Each structure stands twice: as structure tokens, then as C-alpha cells.
Length: 138
Image (cartoon, rainbow, N blue to C red; front, side, top):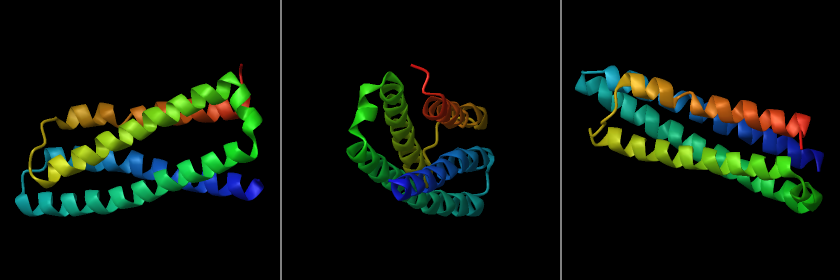
């Protein structure tokens, strides 16, 4: 079980790294007016999204394996809230993927300020999930 936890944490860090940096690229891309630079940002976003997909998928796989090994965790409210936050993070990930696609075809409709605020959501989720897992408050 410790190996499952280890890999779950490693891939969670990978997933969050992508979800922290991808919106930062959106900020830079949204302020850019040079078509060549925009094309470079689009490539960077696409490649980072692939890494983020891998991190998110493996986080889910190792998390589900942990739940399979320790089904008693599902008896606790903190785990229900954690899973709800992970579902919310997955939805955020899907939105990021859609934004990558929009930028790739030149159809961004948000300002750099919007992306700066958008970038804060995974931070709130990370703090909440870590607090739930460590403190198990309920």
C-alpha cells in the first residue's frame, strides 16, 4: 500500500505542476500579439497538456487502487469531500484542455487578468485536499 501512496502522490504532484503552469502560459499567451510567439505558446501548451493528462490519469488510477485496498476510507466524510474536490479539479483540467484548443485556433476570449484569477483555483483545491487528508476533520 505504501507504494500505491507513493505513486499517487508523485503523479498528483505532476498533475498539479501542469495545472499550475498551464494557466500561467495562458496569461502570457493572452498578452502576446506576435503570431510567431503565439504559435510557440500553442506548442508549449499542447505539450504541457499531454504531461498533465498523464499525471491526472495516473493520479486517478493510483487513488482508485488505494481505495480498493482501503475501502474503509469511504466510510469517512473527509474522503467524500476529497473526492468531490478531485472531481472539481478534473473539471478544471477539462476546461484547461478546451482553452488549449481555443488558443491553438486563435479563439481566446479571456483577458490575461481572467487567467490570473483562473490560475488560483487549483491552489485552493490543493490546500483543501492536503488539509483533509492530513487532518481528517470529520
